[in-house]
Amino acid sequence: MKTTALTRTALSVTATRLAAAGLAAALAVTLAACGNGNDSTSATSGNGGGSAASGPASAAGKTAQAALAARAEPAGEIAEPGKPVDTSKLAGKTVYYVPIALKVGHFPLVEKNLTDALGRVGVKVYPCDGQGNPSGISACLDQAIAAKPAAVITDYVPYEMVPTALERVRKSGIPLYVAGAAGPEGTRQSATFAFGDPDPQGFVLMDGIGDAVIADSDAKAHILFLSVTDSSSTRRSGVHALEHLKQACPGCEVTEKQVNLSRMKDVPSLVSSALITDPSIDYVVPQYDTYLSAVTTGLQSSGKARSVKIATSGATLAAVQQVKTNDRLIAVVGVNPPYLAWTIADSVLRMLAGEAPPAEYPSMARAITKGNIGQLKLTPQAEVSGEWFGDPSVFQKAFTGLWSAR
Image 1: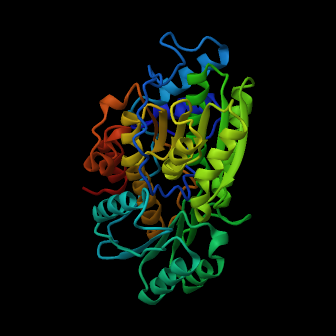
Image 2 (image 1 turned 90 degrees about the vertical axis):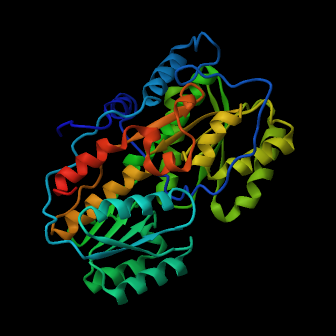
Image 3 (image 1 turned 45 degrees about the vertical axis):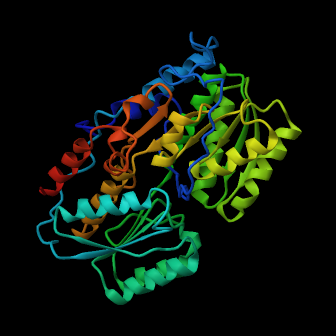
């Protein structure tokens, strides 16, 4: 695949580490801003981590620090996302966009950028809020079938969550693109039914947060890892995170606790209890920044708010701001939501042109740390544009060039 413009840095780190890239940020619908956990003892920064000003001394710590430092750089290039596609006959068409929960996390960013991207070729987007539950998602899909759009997009809706409703869309003859979810075993990508496998987007996040902790602790961390069980993709990413920690940090100790959005209210007590039971825990790693607020509450309840550090993934504005204001939050690793929206747009345009979309796209990820937070504009406008991850015009030009669009 020819490299033209976007992620040499992000991809090279992934290739040399565990060879995945990504975001199973799946149900990482990042709801809450973490409390201002300022502390008299500052978490270390530098170029991506390090337990002291001189950086880690162990081989594992140095390897993690080098990987994190590379991932902390803004993306400058992207692997060419595909061949040109004929969009000349698509103007005036409408597609339905049905995310698992439209009003939370990165999904509003995806909707705005998806509307922008498809608008470049005259395709309109009609959003419908899945409301985070099967009945809401099914209602949106039935509404779409009745409206007969040119295509339907779902976003981070696991197939197993609403299989009957998704099959109704398929049988209606409307092209269906299931973004952020793996297809049933044996399913082949086609112009009428295709999936955007989240694993290549999710694993790089897990590598990144693991490397942040390994580097910061010099490979001696005792980690409370909160694995998210909401979907098969979040479970796979959690398993990947634990495997990465085991392989990259033999000297680390990991305690796993499973969490999910339906039991969010229980997370503070779970964290507090784990820390009181085992006072040696010095890092809490929630798989996604959805859980930052709950983790902070648990730290405060346990009396550990000033002695335990945090790393997570997601990178919404609320979480990124915490990297600056919360001394204990050492890193947030994210995949660029605006870029993800453009990959979804590319997939759907290919389907509308009668082509099967690619199963995956290059990753555009970045680790946001104490060392680079000062480079970022912490504004809603910057969040929407995706500029935290690199120049947005790079991926926009790459795609519009393939679409012969403005």
